[in-house]
Length: 485
DNA sequence: AGCCTTTGACCAGCG
DNA sequence: TCGCTGGTCAAAGGC
Image 1 (spheres, helix red, strand yellow):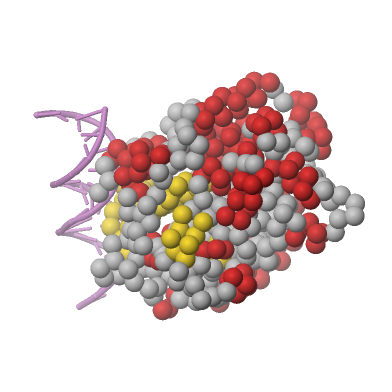
Image 2 (cartoon, chains in turn brown, yellow, red; image 1 turned 90 degrees about the vertical axis):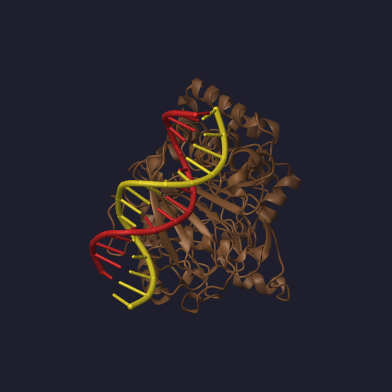
């Protein structure tokens, strides 16, 4: 058992007790960032009105993140704090590396407009934040590095689909877990995850999916705004344990729900009310979990639940933090499943676009799978969480954290790569866009890449100017989310 | 009857 | 060594 200290630190990272709070950071970065940069002129109002002190604050935050050696230095969840500035700090982005958006613009020949997040959530008329340069077709945009096409991606602020970062390399078995309903959550101001593989509730999901789709088109614009408010999730992948931290919009943006939240709780409406389909517990991911404890953790406003895999001889555990309204605010997986997924839940190969069922525990399910398949990815996580992690652990900030299939020698992209796209060199960008999740899977080794891509979107991520979250996709689909604006 | 959740107590690690 | 904190155990209750 990891020392309490480790966990304590972990939690602190999740919810930094000290200022600035995630909400503060986020709003700070939103205010500053989206008004500046290559497309700042689109929202010049913000630019002009931006207080200088915000800029300074942002710089300070960046400095925080710099204190730690680049890739591993950040504590598991403290990333939430330090990462944002680093990622989004306009100054750093534009000055040091020219900014991803700028680089992308150079490559593609056009610039990717930024969404005016300052208006997100407002009731003002919405205009498309994405300006397509003359001569470029939507198709070109979608297929361009800036807007990587992802057939499985859900609507996004930029592409019309939410650009989930896909870690398709992943290979191996796809965790059946899928986040359903996330589509429906668009109305909730968040992007949705698509289920990787079928869930037992596939049929239901399908039905929900259809319903959701109808509203998606109408709410597309709204999504654009809301997506900006998505929360971050930190994925920590140490050797054996994975930590998924999702800052619920709750904590970050008030009413907005993070993707993870929605995933988890099948659906809470915008008011935070639960729909009839509520949290189905942890079985949705295809594995069965038994809750064996719950505790209120210090420095966390949310209770932490402890789950164990019910499979005999399986020691996989997970810790889930939920907000008062049931939204998941953090998930930590520990251990590796030594068994296959229960047949009833096994529906691999189902496009997650079809698995939008109100599966609640997307995070969990993915995590569980990760735990299942990926052998002991996080066993030492707890140990590393606070000390080792910084130097050795791999951290990933994602809206949703999904464990990587076990058979894969998955090394989730380093947090730095995954997150701080803006500071990546071109080469790094490529890495970020194609190899954020480095998964070396043997399981499906006989499967061709093309085949894999059919099953899941290419590992395209970090293709836009801003990364809000990263979606990792293994063979079966995205298992983590993030998006850029 | 079996499984799961809840909940208080116990244990272990750290300062 | 003690107190704090987090993680786990296990009894009780519910479904």
